[in-house]
Image 1 (cartoon, rainbow, N blue to C red):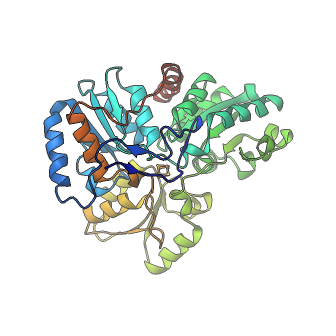
Image 2: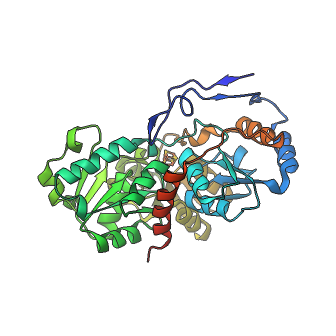
Length: 383
Ligand code: SF4
């Protein structure tokens, strides 16, 4: 049976790619989700592959998938874990496309990185395409400020955007080291172009670096010159790309007010990809790994409302039955692209590998990989 996913989905760094990201088909037999033997088949394929296989699982993955991960983590930790396993020729990345690209950049030439469903992209990463960022840089040149600008891209961006940043002497950052990346950038230049998540950029600049909201402008790639006059660009310290995470961007100040009214004494814990108005109201702000640590260390009986992806919040609530852990919003919100990786796709990719057939391999061309690696290396060298 050939499954045609069909829906018009994702743009990557170079724009629409009908061959890989839209209307994705799985060659061969994709098992039906109702197959009661799926769990057994996944175990059997893993056992057959043995040491040749390394399965990575992002924290936002479904339970049915994460149970087969050899290691779980956030995007950067997983890419590093893949690089630390050179003996595994097959790395199956249960996450989204930009993560698999980073794994391909950091792993050896003889390792193959597989994404079980090519439609697992990231709406935030798709909000900054290579051509748009090139055009933005020309706008900065025309305003006479490009030499003063250090570009930083969040890990959640395509390899093309990381390579752009590497070519222009910038760095990658994660939600754990964004402040250190900004401090480093401001030691090299007087302005930062922050891609693609405006919220992480703004929250870090204002709440951790002491900049004002007036020091930030938002560059909108869908408007001529980003919707900004040259004088506005010259006056700004932070030039924020108009991108956001469709999951974390959903939380609102009302979600916080509401949960405080419902659960007296609740601790509000949110990811810095949330909007500024939400982060300002929260008690604790931090990366996915920070959120996990906070809840692991929280005292029994404490209450937490967590503003991050729902699969992770549910898992943490199950892991800590002695604490009250609720999702910050009233409506359900999974990351729909993360959820594309399901058990049928995992079984299909593992069984294909066990037959010696490499499916859905993610590759980054050598030149892009070289510059992207330069930006990633700069991140690792941050003081
Ligand atoms: S949670 Fe947000 S940033 Fe992460 S993969 Fe999903 S859309 Fe992208």
